[in-house]
Length: 325
Image (cartoon, rainbow, N blue to C red; front, side, top):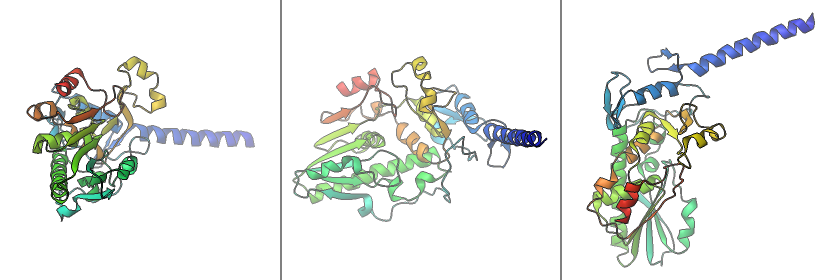
């Protein structure tokens, strides 16, 4: 009898937890408190796929197709197995920095012949310098304090629009120019190199298009000239992804469980992120740099890329053609 009672209790608990898990896995809480009986990822997929134009996304409120830059991601509540948990932050506000003197930090060998202005990847909310610190042995390194570093909290903001993020990236270009101008004035005899990695690679190209190429050398690493709009849209709706290593979807499908890729696409990670990290990436990947750089001298640029880069994908023939020309 005791064994039967214990089995009944265990069965009841299993049913309760199973039902609870099913609810958690199938619902997405909207800003007005209502529940959609689908996961946040599925709901975002619907916004993503509703518009035929590659540069448009369905607006959550009106249902109409709007340009990527005008898209505002709905603030959705979701559960730990569905999405990254947003750090509490009161909201995004486009505050200007109080001083341009805070636009970079200088480290390294003071008597070096070269100053490297370094643009880190990310976006992170702190300076990521550990993977290039070896440069400080032979050069001065100016780490540009991007707005996502200098303005504490914006990476965790949950209400940043793509237009907000675009303005932040424009300010990043201004901060790079401030650093360049100050360094050129302070060290007129030194060579100045611009080096950008990942998100910093996109900012490097943006800077060249906006301010021209006045550097002695430009080094761009692990970026894209034109990030496919398909993936810009994914960033805009808050879905992070990884590129297929070999360009073969069927082969990649075999490893998706190991890689933690979302079941609806071989390119999506499991989680929708409510933070502004992906919004900032959408803004930096939105410009078509092949067009913007048509009249810019790139003859002193070294461009390093991988044909199998899971973060940004390999360059296509058009991008390679531009760089070779």
